[in-house]
Image (cartoon, rainbow, N blue to C red; front, side, top):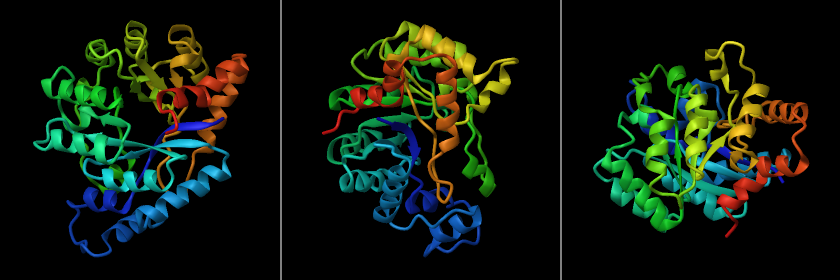
Length: 299
């Protein structure tokens, strides 16, 4: 069983909202124009994009995937994909706790839209994780049996860079140790830190060692390794397995747009590492699919 806990659903509304600051673009057909500028396929309707994802997952024998609404306000796009293919997709959505309508958005997304994970990007939206508004997010997740995803460490958004949009992120705010502080108060809420902490690997391990509800996702090329002289992906896996264990590592790719599609190279590199480390078939099954199914059981 192969599942993917980290795929971005770059919908037409996502491109439209993201590109509002770009001059000279018409409102009608804006997403297709932006996609062409990026060299991407036109995402079309949520229905069309969700079917493209189903076809792509089928091609790579991926059973289920988390789809992330990657800008606040695009929850409906992912909700439609989940509605059409509930056996294939789990809905995640980005939330900015500092927005004035956060409480209403959380209630609607976790209730009516049946999203199952709230995604926080503190460096992007510039808030501290000990902010009372973040506590409200965890309370909402707890009330609805949802998970919370917290991006830590280095944050680069390739689509913003390609479009020439500013990325005024405050990396000081994405500290896994701060995640541990709030996660410890909500032991029933599964918490996911992506990319092994994205450069704050030591801190991510410390956080997960302290809080048994913190999980690490293995997604992306993990290029943050360049900040740690001599570190390799094999060494990262070895240490994560030693500290966190296979029960709290969740495979992901950080796939996002078409025609690139699902990132086979990420999967193959991690499978090679697991083979080199003699990770048992049982533990591989947990990392590659079982932990995903435990946290997000099929309805």
